[in-house]
Amino acid sequence: RGHPLTGLGVALGLTYPMGFFARLLWPSSPPYCAAWPLTFYQVRYRVCGRPWQTLDPAAVHLEGTASMTECQVTALEPGLTYDFALRLANSLNYWSDWSEPTTAVRAELPPPEPAGGGSAEGGGLKVAAVSSSSVKLAWKPFLIKLQSGSVEVPLYLDESNHSTMVEYEVVVKASDGAKTSHLQHGPAILQESKTDCPTPWVEAEVNLPAPVAAGKPTYRVEVRARHRNAPFGAPLRTPSLPTWLPEVTQRR
Image (tube, rainbow, N blue to C red):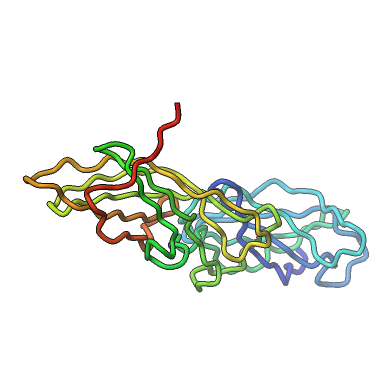
């Protein structure tokens, strides 16, 4: 067998709406003197602590004078941690040893946080009555702060990556102890993305909790978000809402 590859790097990539892939990069020139050109590479990967899974060999495509070659391993399961290794073959079908495993990659992002902090003003939360039993809400998409220290490896973003889908939960709490909740998916902004593409506000219509005591209760609204298979992040909260709210004009 030949010398193992050195210099294998890995970055975590995103696919819309909620997928992950690993982007592997390695030097285009062999790590040792070779008379025969490199023609194939092969990747293996594993969930840390489990057996390796080996992909089929693939042809090496060198583009001009590019110093690095790359490939992608798709469909990583959110919340799991992976590592990767690679080997190379020349035109005589002579394979190198497997490289050392890469830095471990956890397929997850930092939790979504309210834009402008947790206040209704900073997060742009707007509330209006639809009827005596429901309210309509709108808020700025939450932010995912990619430089928070939670991302273990570099995150690969291209110009098309500026948001991802998350699950929002809206909870309406009444002063008499009653509450209702509502779940839906909506966009969250990747704060370090390379584009300023505007993203529409997230909207929801939620039923008010049925009173459990006499009188007219006041209400508080809480909005929080999470990635698939992950806990919720910090919430966006309103102050106490009056019993009377401005009504939404219904379109006919």
